Image (tube, rainbow, N blue to C red; front, side):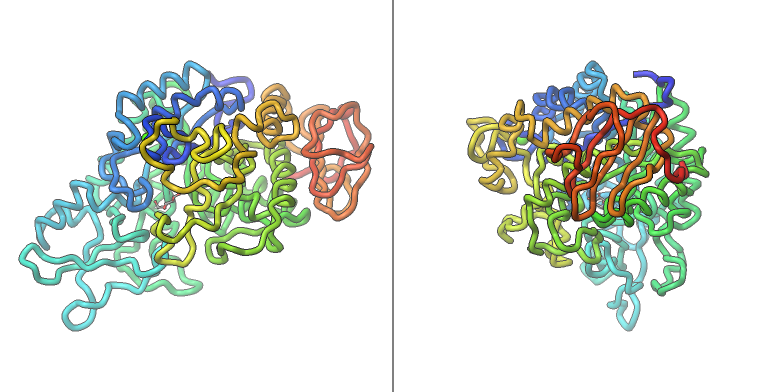
Length: 549
Ligand code: NOJ
Ligand code: CA
């Protein structure tokens, strides 16, 4: 588990995202938990992943599935206990799997003791300084301080009631009202989170995923959002001081502890600023996640990604799905294969068979690109977005506020058996899974796919296995190869090439010594549309222009 010649682990890792509610339920209450994760570590070892990122597991009223944290130093009883978390960390380490926990610094839960004290203490409570409390506008203060729009839709301010029952000040929440934003200008907030980082680093975690990392600082003048003007709450320069402090803390620990930012920013240079050598180690590449399944767009995205990362010396990351976005099997089966929250819709017609074929090719593409790769639980099973969840069962706060939700990518995993709960919960479970699983997932269980050479699961196992053994993969350089229109071809290291056909017709394979792995059947020496192949080549195949990186 130490740094290898190829550099620290986070530069090349395959990182598996566990969404604890939906991974595996050990105690039969229909909700995933730590017991369930510990019981399925074999799945992670068998897949060959280097690390696991766990979405929040802290005590929480679950207004936003745990991204509303009431206590950053404990585990919610629905997931287990701190002792179990410590055992999980140790057991994962025994298997050579690193652990990344999710820290949510932009906001806490409205049940957090600080916020409760801020409410109970009335307008003069010192805890109000830890948040963004402001008087309302207009006569009687009944208008919110600004017209900002919440990331979940609706406004960003909620009015409080004073302890004497009179209408009081408003507080800021960029997300749900149950997620009050913290005031990062306050030294107590900074000190508290530094201590929280140490709490988890002391427990041996290898990385911290930082939620909403670009949103922490606010312009205290609270101006309105104006097109073309700097945002009053996205990507303020002062946020970088926070991460410089955090980097010093992470660097003070033995081993390679990584800070990984959730940074959604359209400007790649501003994005790369978070990855300067004294700030975060890594961040999610959402441009790639949102990119169309189209050769020219993907190539541009890869080039732009590598060009943005090169000056700061950070590795790129490649992400196809996570717990917030439409699963890519569904996206890639639609006429419009891009993703953005602004255009996110449910029920758009999709061809799941086509989406699956493309998702298989996308797996080989991402696992061959330079840098680290994220795998969202269930993508290795080829799960699709569940878009017919009855309204009354929906849990995501986004659903009521914006007309679309994220429950469809959070449906509990199918492990075994022919009918729900598909081994997600034990046979004697007292409750059904917290979201209903489609009956069609009987063919997508881990058990059904194991040993089937054509399954998504065996493709991921094979690809990650080759990636581990192949010195040219992971961090490093890539070279574009000359390829027909609509085809992406690139070489890694000495003697490895990846080809992806995004065009409409089969294309001939370039000269090669052996086929290592293909995402689908080849037609003789032809690579069919929406298919990718990994080839063993002579050391110096015909090179096209070299990519930055
Ligand atoms: C990003 C997380 O990924 C998402 O699930 C959450 O709702 C928001 N941040 C707010 O914490
Ligand atoms: Ca449970």
